[in-house]
Length: 63
Image 1 (cartoon, rainbow, N blue to C red):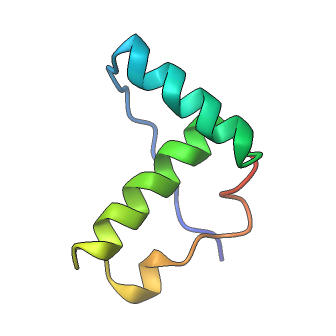
Image 2: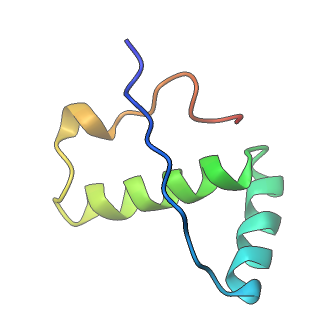
């Protein structure tokens, strides 16, 4: 079963958003999916996300 998704408004600088857009384009992801991927990886690397929650669902990559 896919993880529940919640909407969250995000204020982000234009420069960071532009960089995320370029990165997401390179990885064939939406900006939203790329931001979620980067956050998930940072949480995993810092031991803040349980291993069973770290794996992306099939829906995460291209939305």
